[in-house]
Amino acid sequence: MKKGFGVILLVLFCVMCGVFFWSCGGTNPGSPGSGGSSDTGIEATVTAVTHSQPSGDQGDIWEVDLFMDQCDATTVEKWGNDYAHVTFHGNSLNPNVTSTNELFVTNYTVTFIPTQPGLPPIEQLSYSNQTGIYIQAEQDTGPFNFLIMDTGRKIQLQNDIGFSCSFVTTPSFLQTCTQGGGAYKVSTPLLYNMILQMWGQDNYGNNFTVGPIERVIDISDWNNC
Image (tube, rainbow, N blue to C red; front, side, top):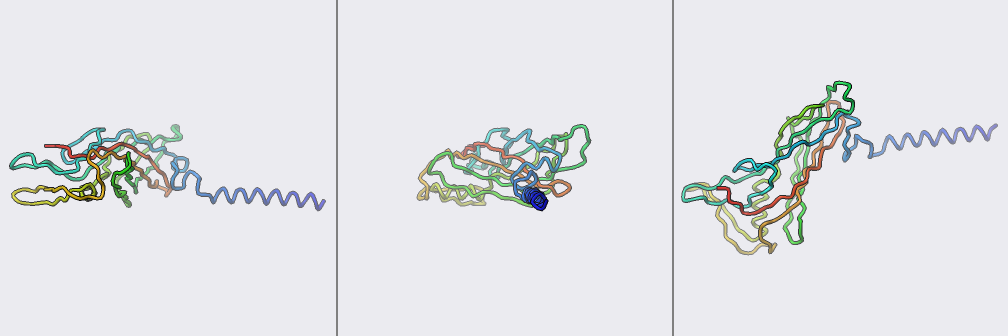
């Protein structure tokens, strides 16, 4: 009788341990790195991604202008930051029940992976505490703007491949460059795999991720006059 009672206690102990470790693990759906849709009730998907720069909308073409060019004696091309514009859709996991939950993208990173050896590294962009980027059940939302390349990283790339550039403000704002030196003996085009990863929380504090969005970007001296 005592032996049977001991076996029962051992079985109960194992079950309780299993439940404890399962609930404390970091791989459940709501933990960072997973989709989290089973916690939020909404599966976040990306329905459209486009690219723009100061010269205008490029659609799904990812040409990043590395240098500012002078168009003629009095005008220069529009040059500066590049953005991705992302449209989301929320798929309700229970379409028979109207969901009042919302997802809010609060953080994102942009990572650049060279497509070939010898290309200079590009520092990752990382942003937190974003506001106004939301996803709702059974609706399209957006497009929302995500900075993917700023002028500071462009200037660093210019230096890395051997260009010393400066800006003059008179008679107009213009970037002038001289070539020489540089730690990386490469020439344009510079091709990178760009990875945009986003995450955030819902109305109840549950974590979710969406992405990654991946595109090959072509960084060159594009003439956008």
